[in-house]
Image 1 (tube, rainbow, N blue to C red):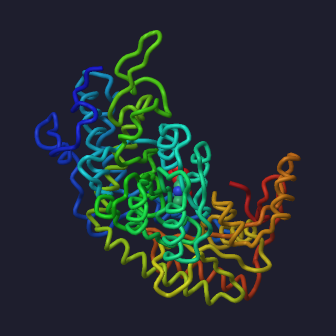
Image 2 (image 1 turned 90 degrees about the vertical axis):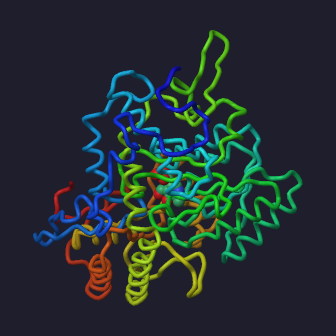
Image 3 (image 1 turned 30 degrees about the vertical axis):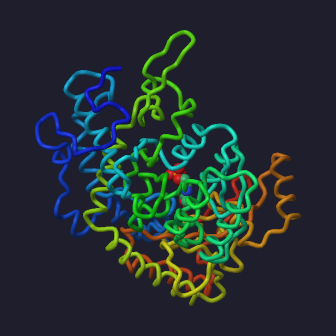
Length: 477
Ligand SMILES: Cc1ncc(COP(=O)(O)O)c(C=O)c1O
């Protein structure tokens, strides 16, 4: 129960002083080289293609996971000799591990522009953050969401009194329908839960406007920032975002940590979602006194290596400057869309249309004649390009974009219930990140153009058990 750190629940103040003197942040200064040109682990990896040639691997699946920043790995390696238990030991290594873990909260809070009173819960990822939040809210909490969401920001809310807005055709329509739903609700909503940017179509959502609308009607705003954190600056305090979650593995820190940030006061009335050691002040045979700070939601041994990586990524991205990141990626995203639009027959999906839509660099598309698993297999086997195919954990949105009928959805459902693996409808998604280059985008556009003009150059067979295609010329990895 006795900690070397500040008492839990204490609002963050000035930076904590490191046990070796100086601030803990000075233990891991961001190198100048990382500021000027971020480097990523594995950028030069080559893979064997179906024609027997090796090609540099092009990672265009940044929406799913991003490569590690070398700066992140350097900080992790620098920390590892000091690795020990967090909140659980009195040895120097334990104290240092605890201090580094605790300091991550301030770094994360600064990265997302949180209020001084906000707290940071360190979790595995966005999914865990939303489950922690949803699981600690009182039963029957009134939550308003949207059908655009990733399953992570949809399914955890179904344990509450959950309603969804209709699909919005524009940012204005989203705000108007949100306002109307909150205004006309017979019982007021407690929480509005929205994505910050779609993981399928990339539109950036009007968070400040949504916060104003939610607050006007007495609700709070939760933002799933999994797809925004790596690509745009986040201003929780300035925009009025009450609660927010994001994942380290989507911001170049794939070491298993993410964060839930915000005013956790409403979560202190019921037991936490995760229960176990570290989350309590005292346990008797018939009573539990839960922690009052973020530790209440962090039962079990914390992932301090993940926290080191998460903080390192936040610092490295801030050093580059999120506006600079956005500028770089907007150029590449425009190049990607323009290239895809020129590919004969290619259908590009979007939720909102118009030249002035701000999108993160995500493009989801179909090429007629090539089912999505085949198209993804061809890009991999013949061009060494990694993309994602399927429905991207956003089944409601994909059903809408693909125009699936109720009958088609029922037929798919019946096949799953019968224990079969149906050939699911879907699309291919290419997504860029800070490590993407103009040459990478060209590689994809040329590969698709080549395929549209000449067809595949290798042969493939279908594996119905996994709904995937394997290339005959390559042995499975
Ligand atoms: C918008 C969105 N929310 C939530 C998640 C879930 O993130 P994680 O798998 O890191 O929990 C994802 C993952 O792709 C996502 O795109």
